Structures are given as structure tokens and as C-alpha cells.
Amino acid sequence: MLPKKTRYAIKALMVLYPTFESKRPMRISDIAENEHIPKKFLEAILLDMRKIGIVNSKMGAQGGYYLSKHPNEIFLSQVIRFTGGPIALVPCVSLNFYEKCEECADETTCGFRDVMREVRDASLHILSNTSLADLIKRERNLENKKKSD
Image (tube, rainbow, N blue to C red; front, side, top):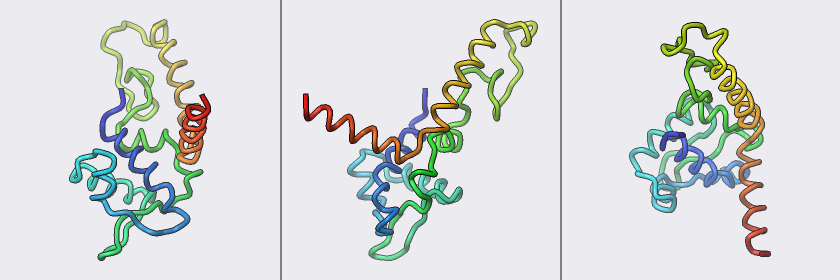
């Protein structure tokens, strides 16, 4: 399950999507209120996103946050890893957060571990190839489909 920090980060990035081209920042208080995200938590998330170059900020009355990286270059896998940790469901198959399995005698012959590696690889493939722009496009397609039904 994704932590709230990750879900809020993705929501905030989706809201900031139009700011990439306009470079007109959005205020944290507006994002927090509209998306029902605790303001202090959102501030911390956006500061973290700024550290890795996904967003930038402007100070002052017209200040706020905006996307600094093209939406086609922001992938779900990097947001998840940065805000929530591993993609893998179990630590013994994690690429970046590996931990030895306590339950099995031999990881190399563990059938469950082998299945979890396949799940990790499939998840990683999808998340590494799905950008913020793709996510927005999917959402718009789903909204259009709902309207036409």
C-alpha cells in the first residue's frame, strides 16, 4: 500500500501540471485546501520535491510552487521511491531497499520470492514508463468516457 505522503505528492504534482508551461506558481494553501491535504504535510512534501528538481518555488505575494521538470520526465517510480520507499512488496526482492528474508532458509530456491520478483518487475516496468503527463491523459480519458456513458 502506498503511504499518504506518496499519494499526496502525486495529487499535488497533478494539480501543478499546468504550471510547467505557464510558470505561474500555485500557493500551497490553495493546493492543500482544494485537494484536502494537510498544509504542513504538503509543505514538507513540496520541499522534498524541490530538492530532487521536480518542482521549484517563487517567493512573495505571487509566489508558490510550479513544476520545474517536464511532465513527460516525471515518472511514478521516482515519486514513489522518493516519497515512500520500495516498489517491491517484500524487502528480499527490493532493488534499492533489500533486506535478507527472515522466513526462508534459502532465498535462491524460494518460490514465493520468485513470484514477488516477477510482481516487482512488472510493477517497476509500469511505474517507470508512466509519467505525470500519462497520468493526466488517463484521467482526462476516463472523465470523457464517464461523460459519454
